[in-house]
Length: 169
Image (cartoon, rainbow, N blue to C red; front, side, top):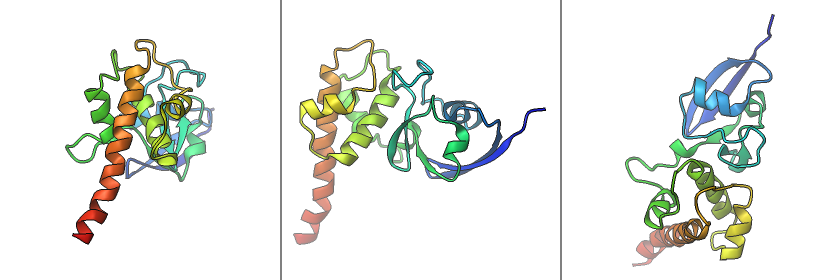
């Protein structure tokens, strides 16, 4: 007889509950139980970063995190990045700068970049490369990924300043 545990998480602003085996990985809960298939399983060992999500605002690799470890926590997946019908600046920048080819790594790369830009709003190219070092892309040379993150950083900084400028006008 397999025992289960109750898990309650908030994913992309929506409360979810499930009964899970204690050994169930968070990535499988997200993909199979909640239907959020943007989080990819690439290696099952946290090497590639395709499964990267945000847990309580911090970068986490969901292929090595148990679902029970997420109980009571706030999770953001690639599906939660969209702002209504508008792409998040990171998503748009990856398109604009051709920062993706096959797209398999892209959701995890964007989630890692989101965390990075939350920590450092104006990173240098070297800081970007260091910040995404745990996420592998097998198709690109990372040049356009770095350009995309830099573009998004600039757009996010401009958005943060725009409301202040409007208030003083």
